[in-house]
Length: 309
Image (cartoon, rainbow, N blue to C red; front, side):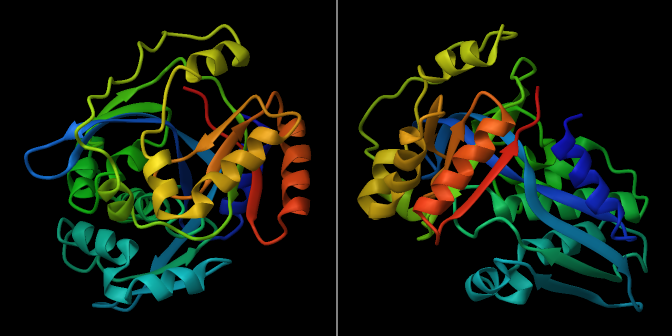
């Protein structure tokens, strides 16, 4: 375990309440294969999860009460986009409460919102997944991974990925998950310039008449971080150009990280304006994050690690 992971675990344990980290989801590659008959799209995506994320805690409440308190840097942004009953944490908790014995659906939940909203980092889906994991454990339901995924897919296509929270390849609408066991831990910088993009708007700008290939074959292991980066350069994010049509900010973060002298590779993540950059070490990522933040003081910028496969 790296020191950043240890720090995360220590911070969670110090809350004194059952807690779960809702890790930021990073689409290292996102190939959109084509539109389905139901109007949704089939994808082929390589996904990793960072050691930075929202923090969810829970404690027992009076019978018949389910509540959610939101704080943190992006609490106001989240509250401005969704009503209380529409928040994915509450929806996930209510879905799980239907599977629980009487009396267990009485819980006070608190979410510290650290992941930017509508940024392409899977914040809402990660929050829903954290809720399912936390309450399954707290309520001692003993639900299997498949049962949680079945509940999660009803909340959003990305929730099963976030329940997995390890390097994976997602296909179909994102619900078909294959563990990517050979992916190395990645020193990363995540940057969000603001201007969150609605996913539907980005997909609407996508050219659906174009045939697109899926991911190239994924080796069972990589000999080095540089070997992985070389493979990653053969992949795409098919939503990068449509996102740029919707917002001029879509290329800003990826461009800034690509220009950093220590950057090995950078790209937009998912369908938002956030980008990731890959670096040789966490120390190099820390330096790059400091430079990027100095150049763009109003951006959200963080150095972190992703978990290995």
